[in-house]
Image: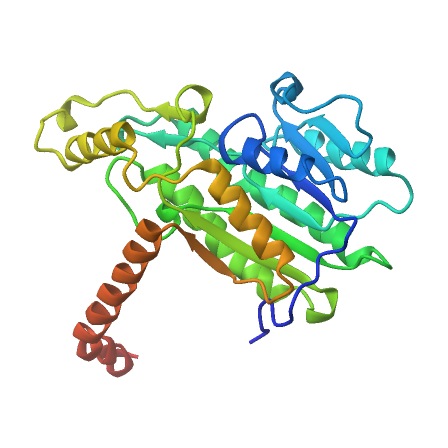
Length: 301
């Protein structure tokens, strides 16, 4: 099997970063971090470019672009604008697919429009930007390669009640990224990292968090989704176990800059690491418990 991220990655001194979803939260923290480093260049994107007003307008090393990841035309326009702005030697060194929002609520009540829009944003948007980035990274003569960070979540490893389509989108991102990472040629020097933070202190309400219409069959206080909602609200209010967006931004920056192999998966925060570890330990026990049943498949064949 083709190895993933087999060699140490050295970020160029004049690295160009493209970040989606920079209007708030993790994306905004990353954009501010890169903008504070004069040796790097930044392409900051958001659905509404007015949401990027916190970045300066008079710095040629900072390009602010409107980008809707659900629109192939919008993505093509953004990449063309970036190439035009930075000139003939345009290269991409780091791409961070951060755009997305959470869809929570009772799965039975989710509409076709809600579910398709969630998958378009979380998965297909990430896939579109990733494939365009690969094209740029593999073709450049002097800056061949780069790092593509696809922002997943603890929700990309564990499934919780009341978030079925959010999980579906994040799990799709994880499978897609691992497959593409094994598809690219090692000589291209393109590295992939699936970032899996747990709770992050962001302004996740509003356009970054959507809810399905409540379903009467799931309204009881003993329903799993209602119980989880209470725990989540307590966690948000207390801040216990929640990461700061700046901490996520610094972790991503350090992975890109440390001159070592890029991890394919990066659980961020002690909560994410412990819960993902426990999940895999439990999965191994379950795998052992069905060993004899699994062997029956051979007999049936």
